Every structure is written in C-alpha cells, then in structure tokens.
Image: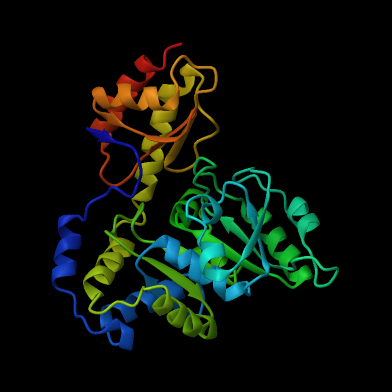
Length: 339
C-alpha cells in the first residue's frame, strides 16, 4: 500500500522509539521536563528567537501564536486557503475572538502590494488590522515555497503599518531544504512562528510556538487555558529532537519522489501547479473522474490519496513512502487518469 494521503501518517522509526524510551522526563507544567526544555531551546536557537513552547498540535500552536499578536476583536489578514482559517475549525474566532479577513487564494504566489492595500488602521469605526499570517510551505497551494524576497517585502509592509507577522511554518523545514534559506533567516522575518514535528520530520506528535521570551511566557498561560498543559511529555519531545537530528536533510528525498510522481502524471494533464516540495496537487476539473472516484479507484489498486474538494486531490510523499511505493503509484495513477 502506497499511503500518499498525508505526511502525518508516518510512524516512529526504531531509532526514534529508542530515544523516546530513554528520555529523561519531568513535569512540564512546572517547566521541569529536561527533554522538553532542551527541545524548546534547540528550536528557538534554530530560528534565532529567544524562546519556544512545545504544544501537542499544530492547530494549538498556531492559535496560541495568533492570540499573542492579535487582541480580541481585532483583525488578522491571511489568504483564503490558509490553514488557520480553513482547517482549524474556527479556532481564531472561538478562542481568540479574532476577526479574520482574507486575500484571494494565490498559494505561495502572494503579492505584498495586495496585502498592503487591505490593511485597516485604527479609527474610522472599522476593525483594525493587527497582524498578517502566511503559510510556509503552503498546503493547499501544493507545497509551494514563498520566495524569500516576497517575505522580506511583506516584512517591510508589516513594519510600515506597525503590524506583527506570523508564519504557519508547519512545513517550513521543506522550504529550508528546497531553497536553502537558513532557518534563522526565516525566523528573523517573523514575530511568531509555529513549526511542526509530526509531518515531514516524522515525529508522532508535537509542534512549537517560537517567539520572544515575553511572548512565550504568555504562550505558556494560553496553552494551559486551551487544555494543552502536559506532564511527563519528554517521551514525545525526545521524538522531536531525534527527528531534527536525523530526518531534516532527508526531506530532499521526499522532494525527489514527489517530482517523480509529478513527471509520471504530467501527460495526464491533471497537475494543479509546479511541484516544489513533497506535495503533488491534482486538479480534476473536466476529467471523467472526480476526486472521490479517483481515490476509490486508487485505493482498490493499493494507492491512498487525499480528497480536498470535489475536483481537487493531493498526493504527499513522506518518511514511510519508499521508491517501491512511488514506482507502484507512478504505474497505477496514470492508468486511472487516462482521459
């Protein structure tokens, strides 16, 4: 079975399990788990920030970060397909009382000038904009990488308007490997980041909020409020530390396998865009199969894929997909997608 639904389906490797079993632990609510503390310090240093906070999920990490930069009742700007407004079940409104407004979906091809024109200042009886959020890499944008020059211009836009800039960096590790941009350079552009350990890096659970020491002090309180206070969680933090040490550089293998899939599917005319990282987006508009029918037919042949919409599907390469699985998918899917 070639499971290409998501990079969240990975399982801990033998080495990761050994690291988890051997982890030194303590009570993290008291900030006394040494393995968690080491993970937080390591990730903060990677991004050039003062501090980080371990959270059980990427959604919680994102929502904590947004509450750090947008007061209740004020506004966040992001794109219409952003994870924070598409896949986090209204958490920004429900937990942070945050109003969101979106620019048209462009994936990684966002235009800072469009964002700048949307900013609302204080006064005029309008909801003031307080922060901008971007996604790196962009999930529904096919794993696209926002260029460094675009992010620098967006930072200039935010600074000019006095706004904070947040990065949903669930897959920022892929951007780092694909474009060679140092993690600390990405970190220097954002006031807050969320970074995920349980996708391409292959840990079983966990994300981190990254920011200033003062913001992370506040984040610890927000995490507790949201039910994210954890006890002897060093067994999970150890998996994250192992992933950073052993699974970061190998993301290039996932990119190469995704490119092989894209090459096999190119003659079918269903690729929704260029494949830069580990996500192969499919646009089935006008095809004889819709996304659900394709997924059903592919499953019967031992290939699993994600249905994102009636005519939109996705293939994702990851740690548990080897060359043999790619060979199988590259044989099965073009046959199913023949016009």
